[in-house]
Amino acid sequence: MPEKREDTKEEKEIKKEEHQDERIEKLGQLTLQDNEKQQDIHLLSIIGEIEGHDNLSGDSKTTKYEHVLPRLAAIEDSKEIQGVLVILNTMGGDVEAGLAIAEMLSSLSKPTVSLVLGGSHSIGVPIAVSTDYSYIVPTGTMVIHPVRMNGMVIGVPQTFDYFKLIQDRITGFVCRHCKIQRERLEALMMETGVLTKDVGTILVGEEAVKQGIIDEVGGIDKAIRKLHQLIDMQGK
Image 1 (spheres, rainbow, N blue to C red):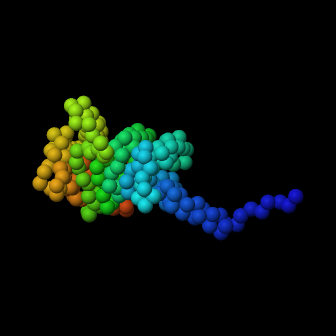
Image 2 (image 1 turned 135 degrees about the vertical axis):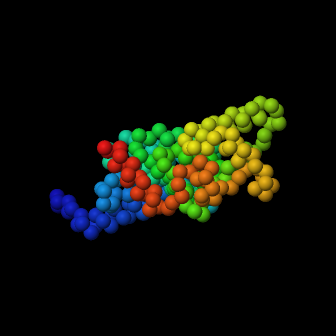
């Protein structure tokens, strides 16, 4: 029986790149490990609409929570992964799925940093603030609005009580994980003069920082540098 030939260095690099490309294409995830500090960082992207129990159209860009949650559990249990960088460009989506992702991120023992790019709207807000430190690019946007429901709604008091319960869960989580006061957050949600034919507020870049939702304005360079610092601090 012929001996199995070991891959050359070049072949290993090609396979590594192919594996990375496949992970990006299928899951929007990647491990950053070629930095000078030799720290393994998991890159998690929250892109498009956050998908819940129902499958969305195949034409939609989605983040599937059934992919994200097991991966976060594996990261917590990993000896190699030392930190998590979360990149967000999301329109929001399923409330339960978004809160589940946010709760998982906030409970990780590994250092975490988030970066809001194009936008982090609706249920994307709790995810953006769930990390140890958060950034938003100068042109990044965050849309703050009350919870919405699709489909048939029964017009009875119990329905509105249920809406309030869901809203209180979201508001409570956000206020526990950033500097904004509950009264101010609720005022932004109920603003009527910003969104056309809707209720809520659009915060752009520096305004999200001034309101106390995001920690700092910055890009990928600051986000990665901060995550390395948090990893170093945890190591000490």
